[in-house]
Image (cartoon, rainbow, N blue to C red; front, side, top):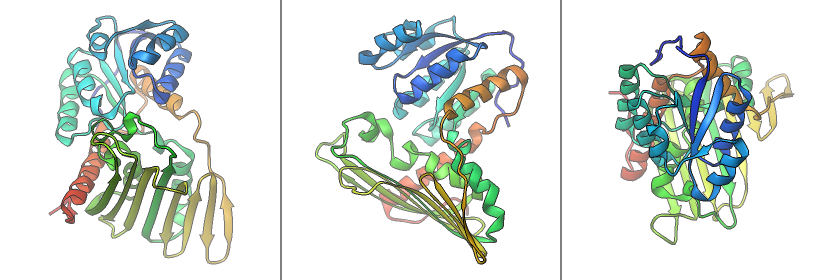
Length: 332
């Protein structure tokens, strides 16, 4: 169920952007190319903001608070550190603005629930981006899953060695959040394909030389879905890892699907064949266009904030399992 119902009362949306990183720049480019939007102001990293404001011919703001408080904006796009997503979204919604936010909506489940309720109360769109659902991997899986019979096991691993690891917010405990909350797409991809989760186990380890930043994190979660499907999700990054991996295996009683980087393989009893995987390029632009299509033309979106919230609850269960060493039951 959507938290906002079109149509808009305007022909052009005036946009404020919070963020100066990779995702923010892709958002800015997508917004500038769409005639239905006017990118007006940006807030973010003081060291980058002046150059970006000049590049996009927009106004640089000293803080996200100043940007959100402007009365000449219709929508705020949040592409900044995970820790700030929730409070920026709340301020924007309370200020009568639509919100696009990169996942996660919040690093806190209760805050995310409150934001979804708030968006409905003020009748504004709250869209949580999940571009993993739009990419080649996901579409390839959806196309071929019915060929491998009843599913029983999934292994999804993303490992990113960094030597040395960067001292960036993505390696900061509070700013990034628990690994599977900060990297929520790793769980959301599977939940979108395989449904609701019954139990969660998780083990997590950090290597660090200071209290706020870590040099490496390694997280391994085990999900048991309502269907009985077992899934292992492995996420790691940093100096203590030595081999990069982006691999997803789905095993069924009649065959398997293996996605390894840009290579896809369908394994059946009678044959093994390569399968084409679509591109990962242009997904932020596609997401942006779909949001605008919804706002202006009431074309349904591919994701609801409630679905993202459910995955956030699963990720938080993984956090609690890693903390306590216990199996977390999501259902009685």
